[in-house]
Length: 161
Image (tube, rainbow, N blue to C red; front, side):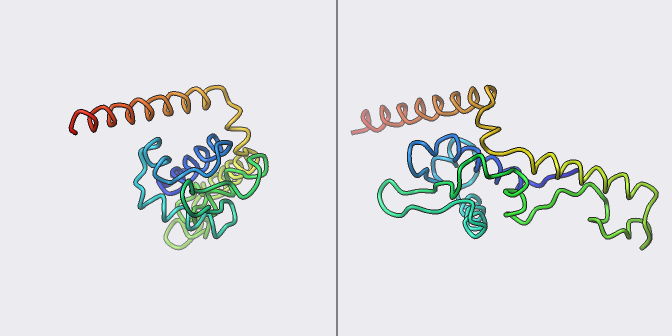
């Protein structure tokens, strides 16, 4: 199964948002810096996530994005679907014309695997991921790294004046 960058980045950005949602709106610039995803790419993803009613934007100073629902009710499969991705392990994208226009020997094996993966992702919510100790540890490290970088930039700016 090949989940594209778009699907991976959408899940990563939504998880970042869920981890920081308690602080109010989260800017895409913050997510971009923490997750090393281009701001332009995040803007494209969040337009799709907004259309799918997974997030909403808050305008003005201190604005950004917030989850539209509680993290317990937003599932990874839904995020992937919102950015026009699918979970498909078949060569033919499920059409059954894998081998010269006909179904290949292993088509149904890969189709069953796709269904298993989709079922798994339909059962994993953002809250499930946020509650994981390893996810919180990594997020804490990213936050500290971001703050340390901001402090370095402020020191450089102060010495330049």
